Amino acid sequence: MNKGSRREISDLIVQHDPLGQARVPVERAAVVAELAELGQVRAARIVSRMPATGGILDEEYVNGVLFRSHAELQRLSEEFLQPQRVLALLRPTVAAYRAHATRTPIRVVDFGCGLGYLIRWLAAKGDLGPDVELIGVDFNDSLVNAASAAAKAESLKCRFVTGDVFALDEPATIVTSVGVLHHFAAQSLESLFRAHETAGVAAFMHYDIAPTWPAPLGAWLFHAARMREPLARQDGVLSAVRAHDDETLTSAARAGTSSYRIGVFGTPFALFPVTRIIRPVVGIRPELVDQLRRGLGRMHRHLNLE
Amino acid sequence: MIAAALVALALADAGLSGFRAAAGRNPLIYKAAYYKGAVLRGMGAGFGALVTIGLVTGAMIFVSSDAPAQYEMFVDGGRRMLGIYIPFATLVAAAFALYMIKSVELRSLLSTGIFGPVTLIRPIVILAGAAAAGTGSGLEVKLGAAVAAAAMLAVEPVVDRHYVNWMARAGRIAHRTRAPG
Image (tube, rainbow over all chains, first blue to last red; front, side):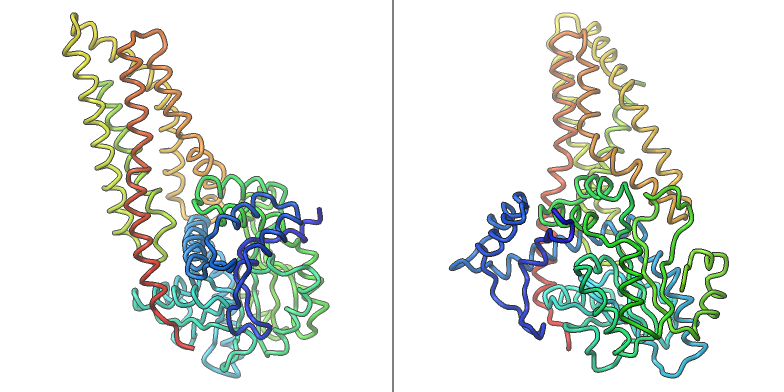
């Protein structure tokens, strides 16, 4: 089976209208049938056990499962220091933009933010400067609500919005994401990257699982050891299988855009692929590149832009 | 000495069980107090397990016709347990020591190479220690080792219940809050 044809449960049990504005009812039997047809027997069994009323999945139950799964995902992000990885590239990117700033504030927007861990961590860290606005965007309003509640509980200076990252009232300066790109089919990536250019984004850095040879084994091991929710275990392992390779991502980004330098930000210890758990595909306006390289210091060797 | 070493290892293991039960359930950023409470809660449950183990083994020694010999058999069983547990604990302690180095790559390597796998094999190690203690021993030591293993394996599920309820409350609060926009 083509790895891209397999579906994650979380992509199927929450669906929105074509404008992405409102949740629509999801028929449990349809999801179970789709997963079964794809040969994903275990995933089908997980969904078949979810409560439904009149055949429609219980939205409150689904919200609860997604909340718990994302909290477990946050734990993995904490363990693998993912915000620190993002900050290592984001901080010099913000500085590079600031040096050429044509508009302020600088809006850093996390796309598909889930519980907003990255944005809240950046707000708590407070490293990026007072001219930086931190915004998390997700289509899932229950996760956005939970992210807002968590930020409010700790008085963090950031906000969360339900909707489309490329249709915000206040346009994004830098767009980030963690673990989102593998949710897109390879053929959809080009239009996704094109949307950055259309929206006038200055730079993007989309972190996702690096499809190294040990990634599926590592994902299985970690989801077995750390995750409790069957959905989180199932989707987590599949995400490592579905992850796009560097060539697919950079080709799509180059095909979809013309005003960015595109590349991948690598990592030291390339011979130990387990350390390269996630890595970003990067796009940045050419006028910012020199400043970004200076800001990265010795790490600039790992930024392979074309 | 043997008993003290086993008690120390049991409390350390219970503290880590508390941490694991709490991890992945609190989406906040600042969680030092939360995790400290979880470790203490785990150690509290571990203390309960140790009291249970102490009562069972103490009762068997008390009712034995030759209490000193029975005590020595438990000590020998404990020594064999340590033969399994000390290498495992040393590996975990060494990984924690290295984790203090603030390197993203090193920490990732430790997580994938050590912490994940040892979490998965912990129940097997506990049972292997109990099996080693019971090997070549009388029924009392076998029974004591089985009770010890069961009590330590029960610590995490017991603490887990608390955090399942904690998260259910947190989820309800989170979903009642409406985001702007």
